[in-house]
Image (cartoon, rainbow, N blue to C red; front, side, top):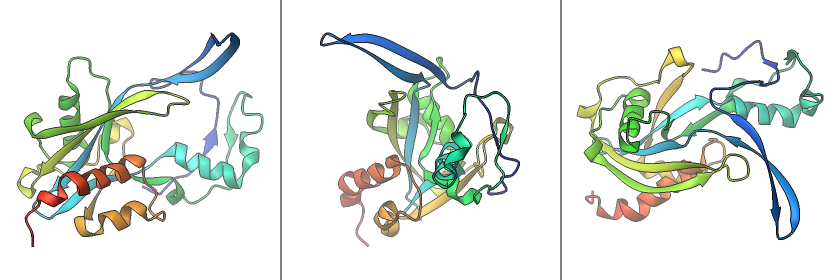
Length: 222
C-alpha cells in the first residue's frame, strides 16, 4: 500500500468523478460567484462484528490527503499549477502520510440500485461480508464538502458475524482500489476515535459516538 513512486502533478482536464463549475448569482443585491465541483453522492457503513465485538473499518492511501501534506512541506509544488505538462515530485514524503482510516463507503453511481443495495455491495467488495439489505439500519444522511461539492452521504449501520464473511474484501484492484480491512475492538474504539496519530474521517468519529449512545447500552453485559 505504501509503495508509492514516480509522483507527478498535472492539470486535470477531464474526470469521471469531478466536474468543476462557477455559479454566478446575486445575493441581497450584491453580485457574487462561487466555484464548485459536482461529484457523486455516496453511502458509508458503520460495520460492527458481534462475534468479536469489534468495528470493521478500511484503511487506504488517499492521494488528496497525501498532496495536502506534501504541499505543507513543499508549497512550491503548486506554483504555476495551471501550466501544461507534468511536474515531477523530486522529494516525496513517505506514503504513510496519505493513509487514512475510514468507514466502508462507495459512490452512488448505479441508478438501478437502491442506496441500501449499493451499501451491501460495498460491504462485500471492501470488507468481505455478505449482508442482506434487511440487516441495514439507516443512521442519517448529511452534506459533505459544503464549500466545494455539497454532495450527500447516507450513513448506515450493519451488524455482521464471522459466519457472514465470504471473502477477504480489499476492493477492486482493477479499478485502482487497494484497501486493507482493519478491526477496531469495541473497548478501544473511543480512544482510537480521538487519537490523531491515526488519520481518519469525521464519519469514523461520529459513527463511533452514535454507537456508544444508541447500541452500546443495549449490548449484553460481560
